[in-house]
Length: 296
Ligand SMILES: [Zn+2]
Picture 1: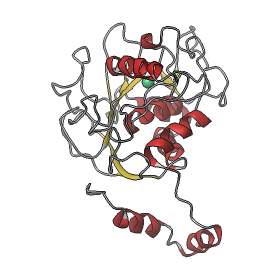
Picture 2: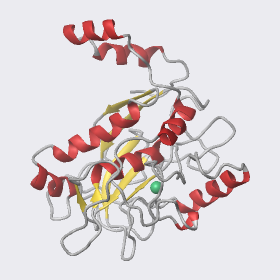
Picture 3: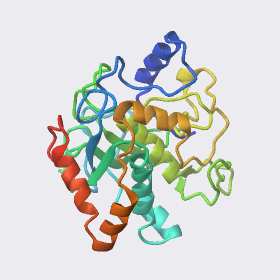
């Protein structure tokens, strides 16, 4: 009952295209033909530096947001439906933000990706182009069981060349926790049998969408949608697992778009850790990457 996105219409198309290619059992992408639907250089296999933020508490929904959504961004407000407060109350201060950081790190370690958290620009949901990925929480409306929604990168052929690109919303009418179970185990239900999203599993999945990946039919992949009507029997239907680590299918997908993770030689890394200069590698890398027109 989670991991459905509001981009289902687009995902239907992607699934059909995947089938036409005779490869419906693997990762899917929002673009096709080897370019587009990714951040920075549109050529597939090239790295990217991606900025992200938490939307400011209380920002409104812009006109491009799904019409069934309501409310203002509850994340960080301290209100009863503030998912950060809900998680931190149970798991300790900073637990929610740490889960978000781990979700980004999971993708960063698998491909040539650098994530940089920045201050939010403050615009309504879907009304601000920067930073690239903006995270907030809204009420998705009655009957919408989605735990979250992730919008794909700009510049693809599925018409995301707008300010919605990269926006990531959690459904604050849903239930969230840090599941005590481990990867591959079933999600823990609530005291009355309610579905409870594991926040890190959900974020890894939704961030995958914001990076350009659609749903996969590989059961063990994080990009397998739990319930997705476009799949007509998704491999993940009724198989709701804690999934915080990438499967080989996810890695193949993200490396198709961004290339493999940059490797720092171990002796150099050890020396830089010791000297506290490791962060400079990321700065230098961003400056020298060709085709990166985006300001960080
Ligand atoms: Zn999804």
